[in-house]
Amino acid sequence: MAREDNRRDNRPSREETPEFADRLVAINRVSKTVKGGKRFGFAALVVVGDQRGRVGFGKGKAKEVPEAIRKATEQAKRSLIRVPLREGRTLHHDMEGRHGAGRVVMRAAVAGTGIIAGGPMRAVFEMLGLQDVVAKSLGSTNPYNMIRATIDGLKLESSPRQVAQRRGKKVADILKKTDGEVAEPVEA
Image (cartoon, rainbow, N blue to C red; front, top):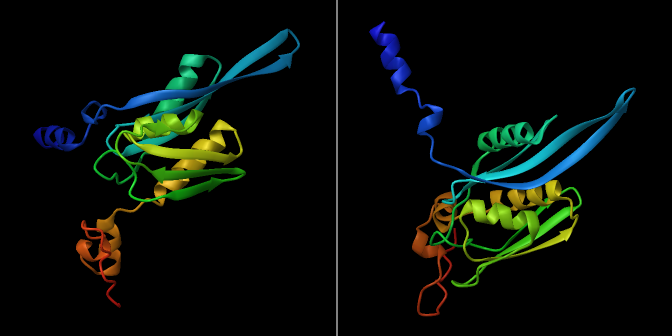
């Protein structure tokens, strides 16, 4: 009995997970016509993040709005990704994300710029914890595709540490020098 209690105590519980903020992006009402009238259903799109570099999205469908939101939030918490942030406020480099007809362009920005992005992309950046970013959505305006394209682009984000490790070099060899000179590339 004591072993079972110890094993149960070592497992991370749902209550111990870090607190996540969530943002409702879209609710869609659909109706089905039946013999007695119409039956309504709801679909919710939610973005969840810890505002420190983790973000995820989920969608949920139910007969009532609160249940759809709850399902979407649970799915979003299961689909979290980690994104490296520069100085905890912006992206390391510019990137483009695609999903279907949705295409988004995201660019790193200087301090004080703020989040310059529209609609669903803004929700993703706020839940991620970005403070300075410039983004533009090209193509589809469907919120589902915009969020998927944004997440696709964020998955491509890599920090100088990750690049240096992948190339087998030091971080200083990857980054530019502070006095304006570019570090000399080392042939590999």
